[in-house]
Image (cartoon, rainbow, N blue to C red; front, side, top):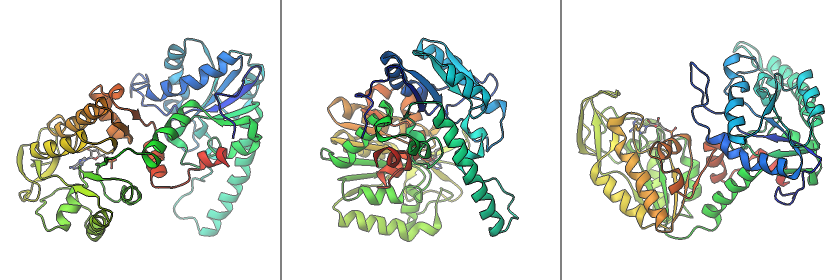
Length: 420
Ligand code: AMP
């Protein structure tokens, strides 16, 4: 397999799938979090330093095949230029004449950014159809789009001599730019960028070479989203900490009173069976013992504290309580490998952010003492950034969904396309 550190880009045009799906200010369209742009810089800089040129392609939001100004990648140009320290050309259509001409004229040391790939349905290969269509019509539309997708993919490939995939956030999607385009380059001319290499290294450290004790911290809204991850982790971990809204499905399954707290009533048996499986794997499970409750789901709600299984009628648990924070923090501080996905409470509201903040701090402390910590999933990353702890943990993943699927043990199409 080709690797970016060994490849010499001199005189070559590289088409790079980056993940510039960044949050924008709703009014000014300025980039509000440039983490993903910064993530792509080492790859772009290496291409330029070698004497090559870079053609960057990405999606932004979900325009579903309809070009719209609010989803234009032109909004990231100024942030990109500032971070890169060089001017960047822009093609206002990723598969039109402007892209073809600008790519053809691109000189060594230059960078070109293509307009949003998802302005074409061909990128995802998923036709947009009204609900009323028959299965037959669906199939015909899908087949027609697949044909057009091939042409679209060939166009992207035609701009460059080599392909670099550095978009970890979309590596779990088999889209034109993330997977299909790789087939149009020979093995020597396709590779992962530095960001994907770092992501894979961090995940493999956790999955294949974890130092013990290994603690997984799972939070967020729903158990159903995390079942496969938890199941794949059980044979590897020593401790499983559960927090956030998903707690209450476990508490209810064990007969606790949960008031109006979040609960997936159809997952009660599953929650109990996960606990059984944990026991069978000698994994210590830590569920919250106390909670901060609210009388409504609102930043200004009245609050009260109770045991986790004594939520009063009409109230809901929105954060873990002080005793839980202490228990969880002690486990985390004694761990050598830590994986965190999902907040401990509704951290977006200050009244319910203390649990998530405390856990983020405990992870930073453990890391300082030598643990390896991997944080992934949009909300836990946001919590780490909010507390300015990003450089105090070992690795912050840029791809929540992709990270979860990799940890579930799935083969990601974007990874397979280059590894095969
Ligand atoms: P997820 O996308 O599954 O990781 O869930 C993240 C979301 O879960 C965040 O928006 C949190 O506000 C929310 N969340 C965390 N704890 C709770 C809770 N106890 N009740 C309701 N929502 C929660």
